[in-house]
Length: 340
Image (tube, rainbow, N blue to C red; front, top):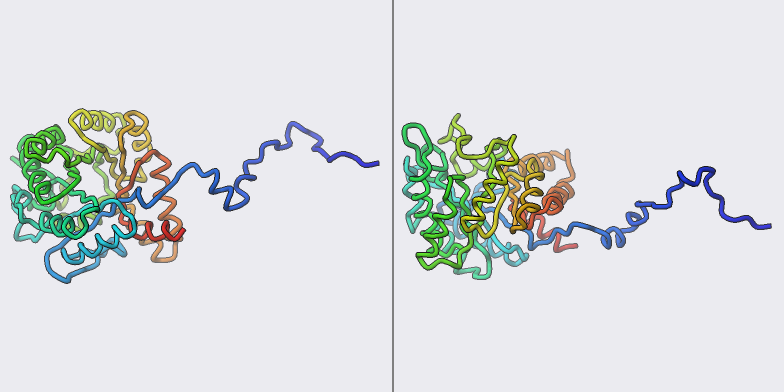
């Protein structure tokens, strides 16, 4: 006499639902995957320096280099060929061109503007994001103008408007104010529109924190020495605050931002999620230099599987709600994603 299937003595404890079933095979894991990371989600930050045929490594960022304009154009072509939608340019300004008021930032023939023109001419289908802040151009390393030891707001906004206009005139397609001055998005939007640049987008660094994760970036652009022991806590957000970030984002949206950004990334995934949930805006996150340096440095020493932690970290931003990620891993990630 054949008996039926043996059941557990305690049927209530027997797992009728087994979540491992869908994890068993690669095809089913892909079929039920909730988060999709694609090449189109990436923006590649690139450091541009003076010179010709010049490249030098950034010591605190393994695998990242400062590139002269000719090499930036070449690198931009690599990014475009991989399907990366945009690059973000950050200048390494000659110390001789730095002043207390950062006047070089409004020079239509400055390093950034020359790089923008070269990239735009060579790769007209590639988005070009330009950072708007004074720290690469000032002798004190602050993002704004300093008066009597204080970073002043309204005078700084006027300087940022001039900077944004020369970048837009050079061919920048996305202005990205990273300074955290009050009212700067509205002022830049009004100036761009009045100057015939209504098509230029604004990707606001809307929730930028006074983070310790920016150190390698400041080394890369040469502002660390100028900033010294000073900090940026009078204008960047306290890392302990969350509600304040949402107020900042709301203001930037009201002033005309087309896209908003949270910076840094991994320590602020909760903020990314809250921003996307609250506003439904195109929301980006910056995997900053310190995050990159930790992962790339550990991978270089064999402490982590570099490729896996790269993709895991980028996927985490998407899972939190980001529409895209600025990452120094962008080209490496794009190659991996294209390979399947």
